[in-house]
Figure 1 (cartoon, rainbow, N blue to C red):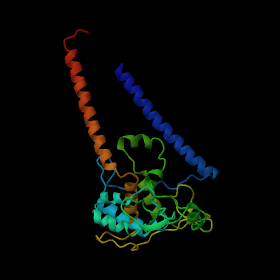
Figure 2 (cartoon, rainbow, N blue to C red):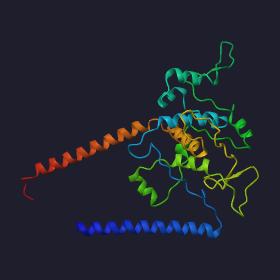
Figure 3 (cartoon, helix red, strand yellow):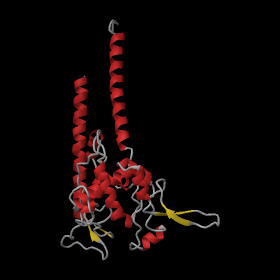
Length: 288
């Protein structure tokens, strides 16, 4: 009976995967046949991240390089309003280095004794300041579209992977959709294919999640940011480093979460084994 049930479940799973794949192919074919585009045109490329998997961890050297790319390139348009300077100590910086880094920024404070707001040098407890005074100013400076805040962008920009891939992701613990998307977007700018119309002021990128082109031009180029550790100064490397940094900004406690999760799974495995052995011992001499 057990073998029969197992066989039925196995056949049902195989059939479900086959039907899901067929539906996915039919949907894709319908989109192309009907001329209705599906975005992104290309799925994000998978990158071998150090923080992937159940034992993943952040590469502090990569995070420091990513911070440099963000500071010298991305910070001109994108804020990180939820990230404080003091958390940079997690990247391997000393307290003195964090204080010196924060002092490069000015933040608004107040009111003072006269009831007026004033600016001062930032301190470690301050958040990264926005490059614009308000969202309207940000939109006015960027063709009407305010650049998104980068604090949680790596968790907010994952692309739906579809069936049956998302089922396998449960077992592989794939959670790097955001960094994969950021990397693919930054390295995905190219000339539009023949017959593709791109609106004036936009730039073709088949990895963009909302359309075939976006208002942001390629933001970075080779040798634009100087690395002190000898790491290649290429668009590809810059994109990986800043994507990893943004993942850390969105989930700074990832390593602790994975350690705790692993210990919980070990505990549950041992607990289950003890319950099974206890059950066998209790009922060993019982007649059924």
